[in-house]
Image (spheres, rainbow, N blue to C red):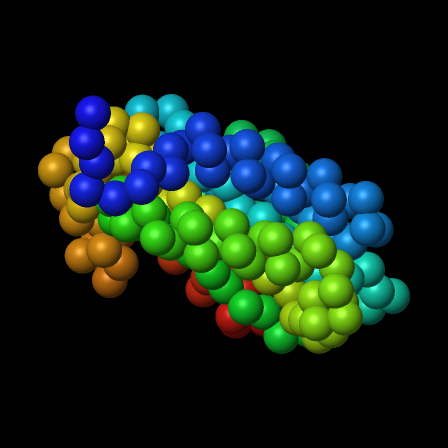
Length: 179
């Protein structure tokens, strides 16, 4: 078997997230994983909220918008923090596995809990969507989703039914940065 790039599958990403979560919790770092929405084929779109514990956390965040609430299926929302947010997403194009390797490096840095990691976590809230196109990655596609769409081209007006992962991610970004 030959591959154009070194694979980093949906299962690999999910395992990476689980390990990262466990390490963050072991260090006493706030790490909340939520399912923003399900993809067209029923795969979860996860978003992690990661930051150092602090006394400035507020109550849990509210649902982003009415359309989003239909998909969230009653999942819990993360706490809000009075810190700047860094939003990171990965794998809108399925074949760009380098993005997952980069994200793994970021997970390793933060989970290593070095002085640099502690400083980053004290100053910032990280919102991380590790896999924007879970259906395309699952099927081994290069750029598109299962409808043959390049999801990178629908950010301006994503449809919650046709482009649920982009819709939910955009809603999360807009919600986060309007606080």
